[in-house]
Length: 204
Image (cartoon, rainbow, N blue to C red; front, side):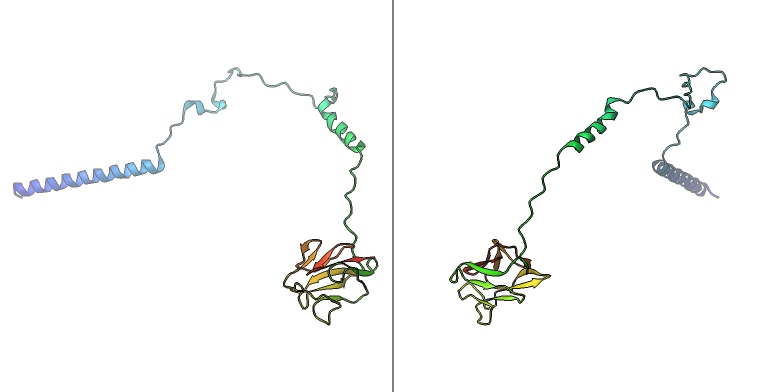
């Protein structure tokens, strides 16, 4: 082996050594970043059992409490406060009941339909057990002919002996006590129902 080949071999070995050292350095740095450094346990973490025998306690142990010790202390004022409060609440007068809503129009309470405003104001119709249809059509039970009433506008019908108001998809709507009716709604006594230019009530 000539000197030039020997020099080339040494350089190759040196290069491989440097390369391996570089790889080990990278692996060690990654291991430190991922797992951190090992924490060395301090001497203060030792258990009390490792202490020298006969060492005095830092604080004296608590004195034992007799199991059958009688309760000699009188109840405090805070303990009796809930009882006194309950007594005051019991002695307070009951709140007045909320006033009941308007009486429903049923087959027993409502006997007539009274028109209160419109072209037929003052007219009365007796109520029976049959539905009452309202609209411009001549076959309606209550015929209302004005520009705001549909051909078949609304209907009064019985449901479990209660009079219910149903709008029949009218153009201008049916109103009970000022509110538009969208679903069958119970009608109270002496409450205004407005259809077009006519208003009426169900009365005794």
